[in-house]
Image (cartoon, rainbow, N blue to C red):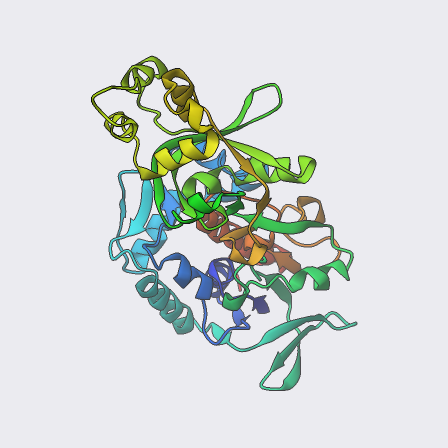
Length: 407
């Protein structure tokens, strides 16, 4: 039995892992010169591969929890850590609950993984650009200036989302599947920056962090839709960072619906409003800036107050305190999709059976970020890619009639 996998990222390699362990002939095709380009980039600052929080909280981080829950239950955080250990890579849980390899880097893990796959006979073909399907259902590739048609007993598509095109996730597959009448949700940026109409004064602070804050998105009635405690960074034209990633979905939905969105911030969440108001009372012995600094305001928070309030209100302690505790940041747009860490949208659940095989294309399975699910950073993206790759591979085994253990 022969299986062709398109995409050599976490989902595609995990599918190859499962299938090769069952003795199937597996060929993996990737457009880039080497495998796991986005995986390596994700680990550049320390590979946060999964998260240790309890399963109920873990699965609730996804926008499609009911769909992903069975996959994550089979291959969740504990399974990821055991899989790493089997490859000789130890892991640890950080103070935030995030899980990292001891060496923190992605490269050693990827090298060990690819080595194990090759020892089991997996063939990896780089610089093979998928061009869609032939009229007879074969996979069309271009490689070295030549066109190739590849047939297999089953196909796993693990082509990534639509962000970071230079690393291989360019979303070209979307049109190929649309031509096959596969139900698709439009790709859109997730875990990326948002645009704010800063004044010139604020733009000069680009690159400075805003730490230890609470953010939330609320509806018109004031009901909180999503909440996050993290940090962000000012950019020339807005904000980016973990706080925004956790709130991407409700902000994106507001932008689509209303053309604008509001991010609410508590800039000093550990100080009660009354206490903060008392600390901000003007003093004849100190400058206003010194009063603010002693109250816990750093340069970024001071700038935000000046951005939001007219100068006549700067000495009004109750008004400044209220502004700090419920700061409204007006969001005008998202940064471009190619700058985002991940994308939402893709192959819809209705397009697939319970084994992740396309209804429109018999024997073709989909997994990873190309599926229509979304999650914040923090190990959730990678874990779902691994889990869906595993699930698609088991679907292939079922489709080929190999679930009795015989290859």
